[in-house]
Image 1: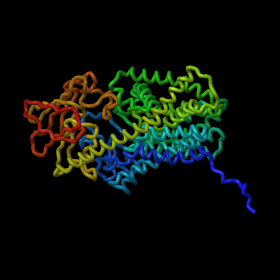
Image 2 (image 1 turned 180 degrees about the vertical axis):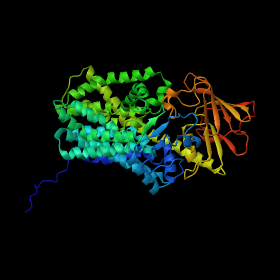
Image 3 (image 1 turned 60 degrees about the horizontal axis):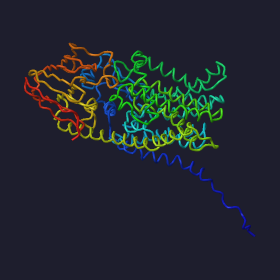
Image 4 (image 1 turned 90 degrees about the vertical axis):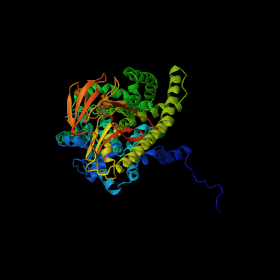
Length: 592
């Protein structure tokens, strides 16, 4: 007879079922959060990549060298074709060593030409791989609860928005995913010295570096773990660092021998080519990135509107408020977890060092966000799920308030902000693509077209390659200014003068100046010649940039076939120049 008292089928507890469903649910939520990015068309450098692949870029590029934008050999050709503007430095070089990311981009465009959604899905796959790698790392080091909260903060952060929407920035996702996988192998190598872990970590770090210099940020965690590990002999420390140091030294050596890097730009401050500029820019950039990462904002977007001390004050307040929660959380951990927590916290700061070479923006925070997310999750667990009753004091009340702020910023505001960023990028890139194609249809003959953009936005530099599906540029594409409100004065049949308000500049200065370093500031009387136009600096403003420039063309400006444009947020608009002796304003950028 059957025993009626037979045991019932055992079911896993709710916490186990939640943990099992967490990752699939998080990946779905992430796909919805970043959905606008998947619907984005080409933007910015994407147009240059298409032109390089299709052979319409003025300089030939191989499938492994698509991130080689400006070199000494082709700088003048690019300036004459309007790819870089008249104010570009004679030293300008923009070359990145990203052969793996380049080859994948080339293959994608060849396989899925004119279907960017597939290229975005490829980027989303790297995002998903990175998220799973971070979850695995956090589960290895901390509790299941910390891993769940930490990976959610990491996965839905604003730092992924631009790399997912901007195909040319996908190398950030690739190097992040491979670097996170490398950390999963490196951590046990550092503790147990299993040869297979060291070899795997070195191989994955090598692939991450071949994807992009973003991978150098993982050196921050390697160094931080070394600092957190005590009582080891010198040779043990050297061997422990080897899986990262050997690939990094090899990569940097090859990079230097092949002439990669940047020069002559304020947007980029290469520490090897411009160490003084790098050190000068580093403090402000590191403060901006710390605020971006921990508060989930884009501090660089609002910092120009506030004095520099405002950013310092915000960063200082952030450190002061976080001191008590962080110290209490770390001190409550056992020795092994405390070492891991300190390594991730310190590593998140050290990981910022390599990306200080570029103007600060949340898209640079991928590697640093691993440590930030883990630290925030530890604080939340310590505050919301204490293992024992603690006496209430001011410190405990502060921790409660900080935990609520963390929950709101990174579980509500962060994902919403990421979605809004993706949607803004999608909307602006879609509008630009449509307006550029519309403009292209009005050009009868690309081989003879002569187009001058008097005033435009950043998109104008990609304008020549966005006028048709193959990225075919027009014969002459000139850009006179990148600013807002301008006054155009017609001096004679061949000369115009472009003037901006006092305190402004015809082109961005500081971090916004991609094409010229502030160390090469122009002075009144300086003359630059490019694209058949002679530009004379008449006046320089307090911003350090020119406020008045005279442009002398080599032909009559009313000659048939010559076309003048003004770029605004709502697209390109034709401009009819005033008669000699008269002037006309071009209104600020507005949406109609």
